[in-house]
Length: 232
Image (cartoon, rainbow, N blue to C red; front, side):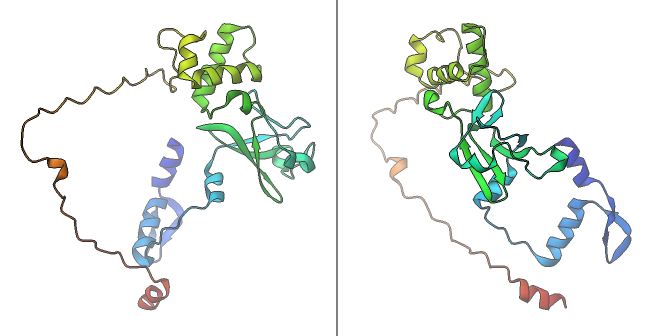
């Protein structure tokens, strides 16, 4: 990410302003000048756009499905693509798989016919959604309980116990500060302090007083054709 930030702010010889051709511009400067000249129209991201922004892992589609981080993902829709070359020679025929770090219950596989959603095969045992740091914590607990921390079924049962607070208090995971933590080792946030009780004194209730409403100022819609005519 730091490299991308530096690239955005560094001048490039290929970026020139027609009115100042001798001065190289950074991507941020060029974008700012174009927005000032042509305007900016925000667009709502579609579902496919969100999938494009997720991290990518290149994996093979085997008979059992797709394996990522000791997790197996599979669905019947992957049938025609099993043990097939993806067409990406630079990736040795592996397939483009997108996943969400905060929801590892499913992955999204790009094929020539569109996206395929493949769930984790042990998700019924876990019975809850889980993030990357939750999975790492469950593997640590599984390693403490047995010698194998790569067994998906065992980790799924640990995830189910961690996700159920009532069962976690009575099960083997009970102990000082056994709750999953985010990466970095930061302890869980303490519970918020209870709000102080109000005194039973007569007087107007501030919550019941109507709040003033501000005037709504609508934004105009950017007209690309009218803007183009103005700059001709």
